[in-house]
Length: 324
Image 1 (cartoon, rainbow, N blue to C red):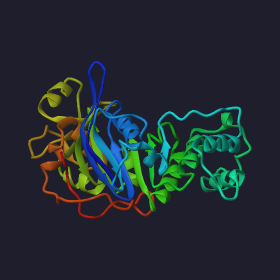
Image 2 (image 1 turned 60 degrees about the horizontal axis):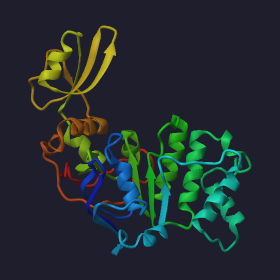
Image 3 (image 1 turned 120 degrees about the vertical axis):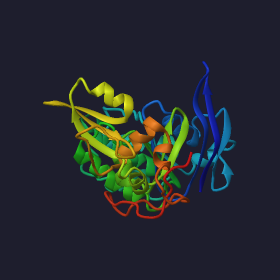
Image 4 (image 1 turned 45 degrees about the horizontal axis):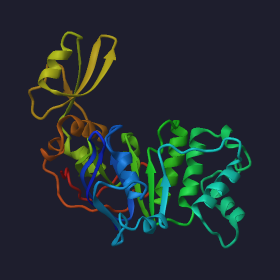
């Protein structure tokens, strides 16, 4: 069990990057969703023992890793948002270098361990190629290979699919889904699709605070019937914004197509109710706070559980709509 208690991080300025974060996670994949600058990377670095908090504590299986960061280092796999590689090295040599830096020991030798890891992330054929020729997805898979070396208890991945094309993203989804079956995986992202596909539970972070904790299915259910779409002229956009929560705006040939969050029937003429998505729920929380999910009657009480059995599978258990 990973526990985060009242975590605060204040940078000189002062700038409050985290403002009292509380989390409790078990095995499976947990998504941390929020915009850039919300505090996700700061939280990941504190959990990983790279950054010291201003106050609060992190513990893994009952051990205070804030006071003893070496405990989590020995059990951690970490893929940071910015992952530097030496382009002149082959994938195999780059991986071996990273494992030496991590102090990973292998009974069958480092060469065999690298071969096994490259095979697991589907890079066996590319292992002899120089890293500078790797695609973004291949670089991320190499990063995951070093992260899972030593069979870590907890795996942290920070913005792992940013910049990947759809095919590479799907490969990465399959790999992360497999890894989440036997360890705690914490996925930090601003891409809603990542959480929708992979995670059985998620939290939304905004301006250093957790503003909602839910599941993808419960979040969609919480805003069901409250999402509307319609086409308006450019002259009407400001009027609609003034009276309703606008989730999305998209320029169209004959005006602007708006997507609204609104409970009740008093919507502008021409708007129709549409099926809600996790992105609708997320944007509603960004615009309105946790009340966007709390306004709908949804069951309460959940802890992080196993990730969906395969990418695209949806969580189906009872879940909270929001937890401030």
